[in-house]
Length: 462
Image 1 (cartoon, one colour):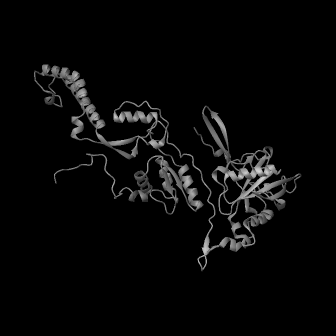
Image 2 (tube, one colour):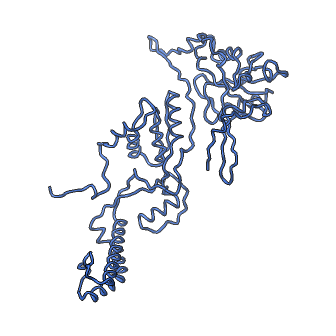
């Protein structure tokens, strides 16, 4: 053994296969899911294999640990799960978290910080805030003798400080009657020295220490270094950021195909329903008897008749009374049925609405198991209001559909209705009024007042 290495000798250590910071962290974290991965494990994997702006795919979402870590470290992410419980927990975890604001390398603040660390001239190139260019990271210098010998800035710093240090050393020698060289000047002053001599001695050492610090900083800036990618520089002038915008795509039903004894695929759903009856016929049969339920019970749409319609996307014409059974004028609604195993895109809704307008319908009722995220705020096209009814998964049972709960087979859903109330200046107070306050065909003057609890759901946003 010929060398003793202390932990303080080198502040950075290479990562190896022994992740000793994950065992305790895995048990100390608060778990919201039965199979929740430790956050430190996901951090190690993402930091070693991706850069800011890269896309991270997690096909087993669970508690959303991977997407949570990816959001924190500036990575884009896609996460998938078959359980709506897991997706709901992940959404709550991501939206309710606060993340540190790291300095972007492609930003004025990041360029300023990079200039201070590397001791270089500030760049004049414009910045665009591109996260793909990375963050400003802390770094560890690797100092060797060649970086000291080849650093010409040391001579410049030396000459600059000698103009102050040499006169002070001459005064000190003249006052003490000594011939101290620079390396012979004691660190501590003698108690027997006069006060003026002690002041000169302290002043000399102050400039001597300042010179050494500037030389050390110059050596560190000119030496090779390693980036600490798990330690980006934070912008303390900005508050912690929230999660960026993301969409929740629908979880479409899966179609399971079994194989018979000859390894031929069988559609078990079609077999249970019967080959003579297609999916659209099943939906129309139940839609005629169950109707469409909106947010309030009194807004139930009951069809007086529901007949097939020879259209491209519209498959039936439904007639109903405006305002319920005791209504006056009869209205015509076009019925659009989405795919049995898939998600309805916004383009299909727009095409169906145009077809309904050309045929003179008063409304479009879309029936589907799921809609994509871009169709969530698509509620009207021209004069045609669009009601998006989510079909109950029990419709897959066809003839075996249980009789209980048929009134909830087709339920209108919508996004939260939010009003932005001005508070002053550039601040606003969003007030959550609840879901489906627009309620499709109900005129604004007939809509109910905001729910009494809605005022409690307020927050200030910048």
